Amino acid sequence: MKSPGILKETAEVLKQTKERVLKLKSLSEKNKQKVLRLLDEAARNFEELSGDVVIDNVELAEFFHRKAVELKNNTYDKKIERLGEKEYVRDAERINRYSKAAPYDFSGKIKELNKVYKAYLYGLVPFFIISGIFGPAYAITALILVIPALLSLFSMKKRGSLGLMLAYAVIPIPLVMGALTIRYSIWALMNQQEVQRVAEALGKGIGFAQATLVLLLALSVLELTLLGYAAYGLYKHRHAFL
Image (cartoon, rainbow, N blue to C red; front, side, top):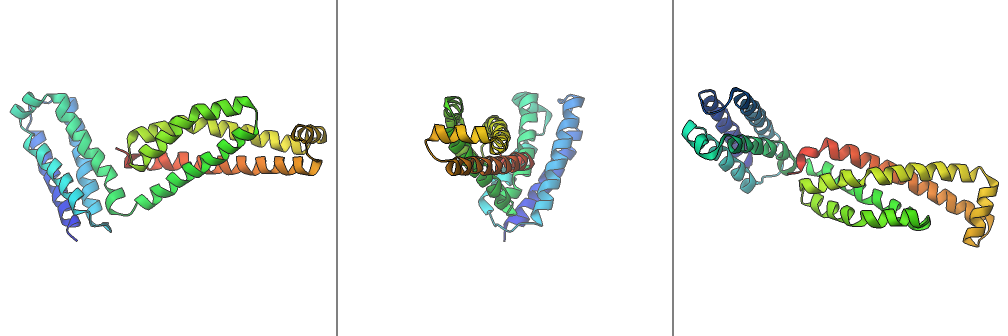
């Protein structure tokens, strides 16, 4: 495999860039320390990754190496004065983000992320089912969330940061509604009058009403479990999104 060698070279380039940063006069002390920290972390990430490669993505490894070389070549006072200090710092931040996202392209961590993605997707399904069973308030809320939910799914599939932000905007409402549904279902199952009311509303017998409440309880527990896991997983793997 060629990728490990290229990633190791990328780490070496970033280490050399650190040495140049120490000699810079065009960076404020605050930004200099920030860039040094970013480069140190990125170099360490690429070096560690070079020993964990299971997917030989040569094209991407060369892209990272090229970006590291570009940053190194820009690490001169005159170049930074021309680029602007903020832009140079942004370039350092960018290579740092690449180093954190790289394991998902080389070490097989993408499998873990796919599990989280599926948990998010499958966790939304019970939410929309429950919303259809309950009254207009639930249904309207679900309709409002349809577009951001779909956008988050499409964007996350491409590992876009927009998808991550949308997912975190979507998840809280289903979690709250799932918790409320669990509370209601348990209360209703323990309250014969409520079971009778549900049966009348559905135009079915007591047994059917009880089965419906049990189904609601099961769906809401599934929803909370999957979306809770998805929320944790998305935070844990947040660096995968660019």
